[in-house]
Length: 368
Image (cartoon, rainbow, N blue to C red; front, side, top):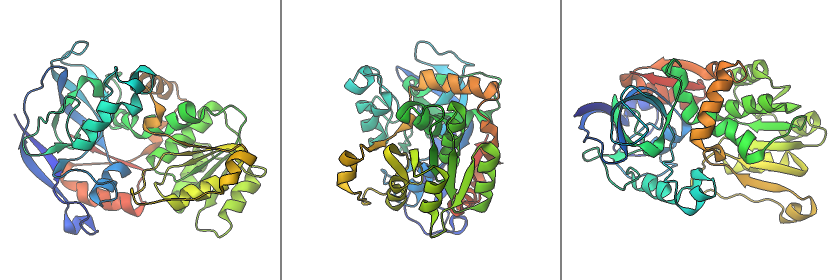
């Protein structure tokens, strides 16, 4: 079939993207789903910094590529057990095989065949269903239809508005999961979140959900700090202040029990570590350029019993966690809808990524 989608053919074109237009809307040939795959009519796809990182070249990928990894849609054709036409699904951006070592240990975010396929720009089987174009993280949601592995799909409540449903596949699963799964934050412990994009604010929502206190939010954008306060942050700190780390320490009685870095910056990771108390845990969620490095006082890991952890996909089990988070949203305990800044059309994507890069949006969602 012929689909219409946004293709990136060259990374690193200069901003503003509304002028350089790195994403070109094209008609592409999409082959039918193979064994274990689904044809999905995409209903909505969120714009994430992980997409922006491919566009600006800080997250190198094989080119050309049809972008979009935070998506929801309706199954049109199923070639996999457990799925039928009409099922509404959210996409997980790591297709977990279920049988490799990490999957067998309950860590599908680290699926080895899934990582290989994502790096190669293929589906889990190693094939491409897009003619002449690579898949993005097994999803390629910036198109009206996609073929995905059934291992990338999680059935969800069909009554959920698509612009909200899309957010659960990345922002919510990653941010809330970093708090609930990776750090396992306990009630009454202090937390600080560096970076208040879709993932960072989801981490803030997760901290509120589990009863962390106090909760500090750090960013450079005043409107994001204001939103963080309405979502449950007890203290907000402007990262541009020269004493920002001291403000965090003062608000958390010497340093946070848990610090979350969601920016994708080695410098911010160092700041998050510096804002963590003795015996505390620093969790990094952002994806910096592979060339970035950081340093910490090595002795502090032992003498202060510090923990530094990475979190990918929120250390989630998507089939378990996405339905849980949707249920918590329905119960009013995860106000995910507050993250939605705007909805856009396929032809608006370049300008929308300018807005994302400028920090003027939290989550914009492409609607079909």
